[in-house]
Image (cartoon, rainbow, N blue to C red):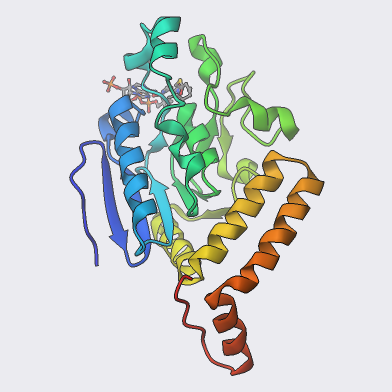
Length: 258
Ligand code: CO8
């Protein structure tokens, strides 16, 4: 079943247990204006709150996932405008706080804030047409939503200093992209991938996501300890009992997400 909500700049639908968010500002190549990102936050809040959703896909159009922050809207900002609005921190960072997995399905341009937004997702599926870049330097500013730390950690992000765009294959080699698919299969593959994740026990999915992020945000030792404790905690789940008993009984498990 598909339900569509009434938004101006995005389309939010459910496909089975998957929440699908499509940026819908085609004339501006999905440039990320405040209202769009506010709608994105609202849709993420709704999908997070819904027991019927197990995974989320965010996508754009054939030509652009998102061509960055809306330059027209921010060109006259003063420092105080940006600071008082808590620009980027408010709403943008909602993706990083999602406890359910979020997949970015990227075709065409993912530039500036668009690239950063894709990088905030758990992983990126890229169409063979995808182009990633952090071109802020060309317009007199710099990445402001996470584009520089990954580059500093190991070069696994588009070049912030040259503004050179990266195609899908280079992005996959750099570890930015999990998988490349033909453009005409991007959405289908992203939904199938999300559907697979959503078919597993939701608490286990959330525990895995939390472990991956904890390791990325702390050291290896802390990451391994956190993983071990959460692994131990999984034995409190009904779904762990069901999963292992179903294996022994040679049948498919029926998870209750508890
Ligand atoms: N903001 C506003 N409008 C845009 C943007 C944008 N980022 N990108 C494209 N558009 C508009 C164009 O102005 C144009 O509008 P119009 O038809 O009214 O003239 C329309 O979209 C189509 O664009 P083009 O005609 O330029 O299309 P091309 O195919 O010739 O070029 C490009 C496509 C290469 C993507 C080109 O549009 C471009 O270079 N865009 C800007 C890319 C960029 O610099 N992005 C970084 C923005 S800054 C940023 O993201 C800061 C990040 C900070 C963190 C996140 C905070 C939100």
